[in-house]
Image 1 (cartoon, rainbow, N blue to C red):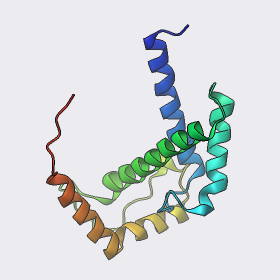
Image 2 (cartoon, rainbow, N blue to C red):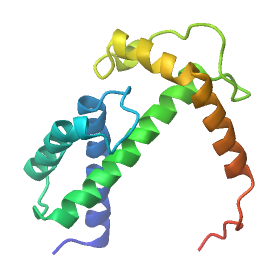
Image 3 (tube, rainbow, N blue to C red):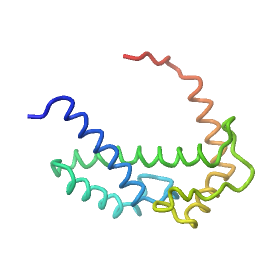
Image 4 (cartoon, helix red, strand yellow):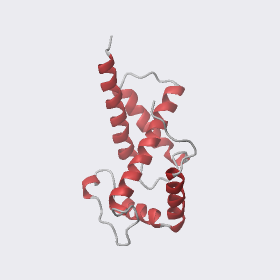
Length: 145
């Protein structure tokens, strides 16, 4: 029987592995996780998870894992935006950001150019500003616990 610490380590490994699989199989230019074109990539992620971890192959487990993968994808895109496309004041930079060579294994130069173009779109900037404003004034104050 696994102890609490052993279970925690396995969960951390799973979450980290899902993030790696997302970076490997889902392009950063994918804007909607629900896009039908991502179906084969999502199936690859699920197959790799089943191969690597002792998880039941049920619809509800698959749904949960793929929801987590969607969150990891969104986080990956947000990380890239904040690190490479925004300045210290959290405003989009005007110059052409350099290609993140550190992540070349996951991102092609063509994908990077398309991603930068998506993020520079005026509609994206408008939605981003709206969401940032909404997040800064929550309806209900967060209470930890």
